[in-house]
Image (spheres, rainbow, N blue to C red):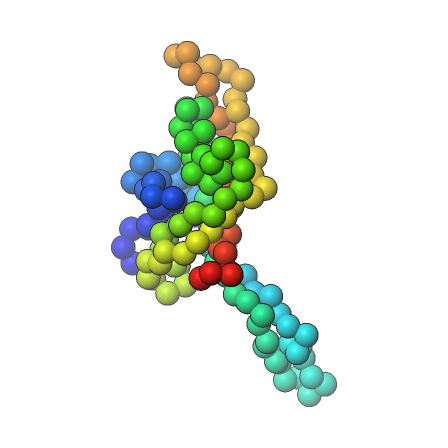
Length: 135
């Protein structure tokens, strides 16, 4: 497989070197319908209402506060939740896809010490969740 692709709202965060080593966690989430389950003879019935991608991206430590704000603004312009396109490597089939995502429930921890007059953040993971309504 080629290098990982991760472009959030038109910004290639992989080529900027912002994604931490091991910081690309990709999973498929399913929601089962009421017909799903296991019968008494052990037969499993799958009945998915929807399937979506979720990518948790952990960014490197020591991004400047300015860069961290840039990353956050990709997912929440003007501080509100919004939809945006993400182009990503699908780790389940090796293809590159573009789908609509949103991000929520993320925290940023800022280090209190300063170096060279800059504030640096200590940790930051952005959960990217596919919009199942449009994709």
